[in-house]
Figure 1 (cartoon, protein in one colour):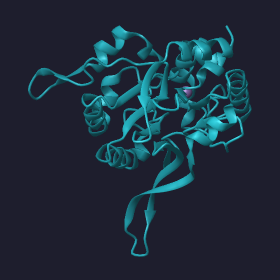
Figure 2 (cartoon, rainbow, N blue to C red; figure 1 turned 90 degrees about the vertical axis):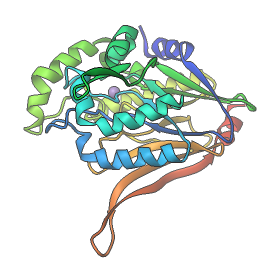
Figure 3 (spheres, rainbow, N blue to C red; figure 1 turned 120 degrees about the vertical axis):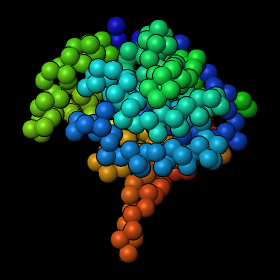
Length: 300
Ligand SMILES: [Mn+2]
């Protein structure tokens, strides 16, 4: 089974979400939310992420998470992750209740491919104080792909995790998970990184990007946004439209992609210090805003 086949299948089975120039979306991926232990890479950025998410909630954005949201290789269950980052999940729940949450699975949370697993672990949680089950993401389904389809121009933006172009991490994710649990997680303390992860191996990263670009070329330059490699990408109109929203586990920042007013931008949130030494979570525009219709012109 080839990268092309897997990507086309993800596109074919994708959930379609209609949008127009008044719609707002924030795309994050690769949060790798963990249990707040030393191996939880998300823990460093949890305050930045929570603040950014709250900003987007208050401004009326929809939230799209492009896979690897929960770190279910290093952690065996969702419960410990939920307990560690409850504030985040309660905010995500508010997006869900208002039908503003679109969740995709990646290789680190590929278990969410299974509807029964999602129903069992994510629809509700046990509240120990009141000793009862409480609603969490009641009725949620996870997708491999989402297509944002513009109601007027019919332009499509395809969102997916991107590990479809990474045969090891797509096909042998159970092996990858096993190795992370027994080998790479303990070795992480000694500074030794998992070589099968494109986020940690540059050669692998280049290969994954090359395969994704090849698929885009064969599919009429469809705008495609992925995560997985953790490397942000923002192509100019006329280039192959492969975008990457980066990750939420950069050493001191998180990156994401905003879609607003028919335009696309790459942004980062980080903690800045002013002259008085006051820390502040700040949004920085990295690329754009670029009109989505500029990429449409290149398609025709
Ligand atoms: Mn991934």
